[in-house]
Image (cartoon, rainbow, N blue to C red):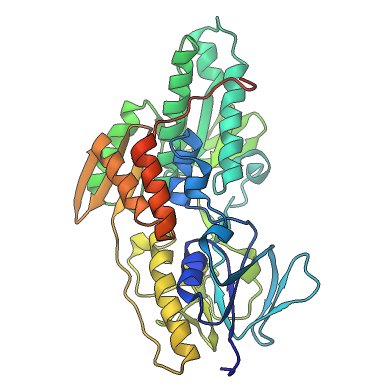
Length: 410
């Protein structure tokens, strides 16, 4: 390592990248690159959709969080591990580094389904939540006050593709928002929410106890669940499903796609050892095999000593970030690098605007109290003590009530 301040380059400002940057501030000249100018606490994007939290709660600007860290906004065009340089779209000169941390996260996987990328709504960014909320409001605004119950059901049919935790949390929030709006507008009938899942069960990565509660809540919300069902194609007005060899067409005001992710395109052409899914294989120290000055964490990396339920989660990226930062400092100072064993920190699912389920130490807590526990749990995981204090005070004193779907222009 050079005697002058080390150039530490971090690609990606999600949980893996941001928390690595926070821990490395002052260890050298640290630069964080991200397409956005803000961090996003994605586990609470559902609460942003429902209006239970405000934008600044879950999406603070990097400038508010990071001291002694330079930020560069832009998409990664290419990474050259041999030349130790990264090209960012729109910048004339590449960024060079002594140590590289890749924490780019994943992107939505449409699995090659016809029309899916063109016509569905993803749900990964603030803009996605804004777009979905607007779509629901537009569907409501098109309904005349004297609409027949069946017309309300047809006009307010929304489909969520993907029955994992994201699909469950999203569909229950949407259901509560739409049902509240129907009641406020004195409309006859009720909305129709549908979850489509290819496997034989919901939340496949979670245990039976929390799954049983999830299924009861979906029944209480009157959300239709179609398992062992594949999306054949998506159009502007709906989608076609395939189950047991038969196809069924469903008209929908919106189709939201949360049916999995795939590796970030920026690392697809990276000449390093990868697994069959295209994930970079990390050493136990989080270093990239064959490149000791490069680290890979989060959704782009495969790390063998991880519980299957942790793969692709924010809590794994958070734990890896702390180990990564310690090992970057050790590398710079010529010390021995450490390995880590990452554990389940507890599961928490939002189930509408009033309920949640929290799994901790093998026990499930559910209902309104679990919703408050979930807020408390996530307060502790916000990026900095200052931000945690501000957000915690806001939630405690101002409350976390949902924001109704008001008519556009209201």
